[in-house]
Each structure stands twice: as structure tokens, then as C-alpha cells.
Length: 303
Figure 1 (cartoon, rainbow, N blue to C red):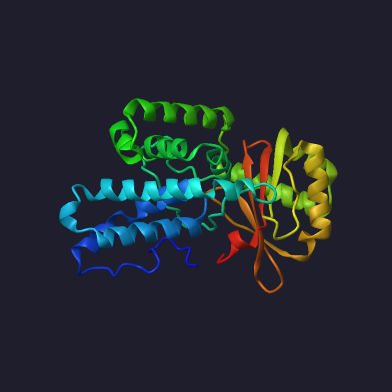
Figure 2: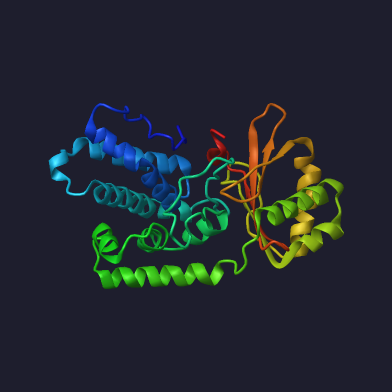
């Protein structure tokens, strides 16, 4: 499955048809919404493709405003996907993490003036997973993509007052759990480098000093590969796990520092070059607050 947001799959041919050209012009915004809504590049690609098929089948004269029509259609498709996936998520084996966005290339951006414009962090996507589909859609459209309440109400088929409540509830949950301090890229990368060196040298004291008191380690194997079945908490538990992971697993693999969802991360490759896992980190610049280990091969396909 194609997970490159440079074009939906199959891609509309550039040029020629003005109807296609309009879709191409708004495609990046649709991809940005879909990824934040669904937490999966593959699912987001599918949603953008579905929106393209509906756009292609709708006569241009029936569309009053192209961007509004496309955003509404794409968002409703994502809400439907989230609703249908709820039972699957409840039956998911072990903790769930979003599919990672790997590399230094820019991920689809939200509106530049939005408060959370560049925030694609795994930590935020995990928080969004706790919202209802409508709360997630309302919050993203209003707070991230700068849609006004009449637009949000039109997309979700609710009153403006109801949408204000959805955004308020979502915003409260996100702000309660969101870090108060944002680390500079240099500070975050330095912490991850120390973490990797602490694992390599099996330095318990160094690792203990790296984790905040409320630090978490979440591993997503999806029942496909061996992984911790619950979220681990606290410096001691995380240090023991880090030492064991290196001794029994990571020591025989090639590890590359790489951006993951806009933050510091590690890419773990087997001898044949295949990606075995991706690790993302949440830090405040002084301590590591969370480690996210993505091991489910379904989420690593194509990396």
C-alpha cells in the first residue's frame, strides 16, 4: 500500500482537467487532516483516495466551495473510519500507538497560525486517540486547522453550540496531559543519544538519571511480535526494560537516529536492512518523559 502523501493512490493526473487540478491544490491539506484524524499514513492515504473518488464523481457545478466540500467530505470519511474501528481498537492486543512518520522531510503541515500547527508528536496522537471521533474532528478542525465554528458545525452536522462543547472537552483533555515545557531539538536529541549510549553500555545509573519520575514506556506489537503487554511506568521499570531490550534484542541490530513525527527518534534495522522497530521520545529537554516503541510490522511496512 502506498503511504506517500505526495499523491493519493492512484494519483490524479496533473494538468488537463480543471476539476483534477483543484483537488491537487487542496490535497496536502486533506492529507494533513487525515493523518491527524486517523494516526496512520496508510489509513490516511486510503481516506484521501476515497475523497478523490467522490470528488471525481461529483459534477463541478454541484460544488459551491471546493475547499469546504473537500474538507467536509474527507473529515466525514475519517469520522466514519474511526467509528467503525472502535471495536477493533478495543480488541487490539496490548497498547496502541500511531503509525510513525519517519524522516526529516516535512510532514503535511497544519495552518501556520494554528496553536498546534507543527505538532505531529506521537504523544499528541496518543492523546487524540482517547477522544470520541466527533471530539477529535472538532478539535483538529478548529484548534489545528483554524476552521471557524460554523464550518465545524457544517462538517459534523451539529449545532455551533454543540461543536463548541466538543472542542472544549477535547481541548481540556489535551491540555491536562500535554507537556508544559517544549524541548529544543538539540536538547531532545542529546537526551536520546545519552539514552542509546546508556543502553549500549548497560549503565543503570545513567539511564535512571535520564527518566522523569512519571516516565512511561509504551510498546506496540499489535499481537504480531513480542512486546510488553502494558505500559510501564517509572525510572526503575524503564531502566530495567532498556537494559533488557538492548541485551536481548537491540544489540544485534543497526540503529539510526532519525526524526519521528517531528521529534527525535531511532530506527532499528535488521542485518538485511529491514525496519524492525521505530522508537519515538517525549522529553522536556531535561528528562525523557515517554518512550514509544513501535514494533507492529503492519505499521512499519513501507518504511
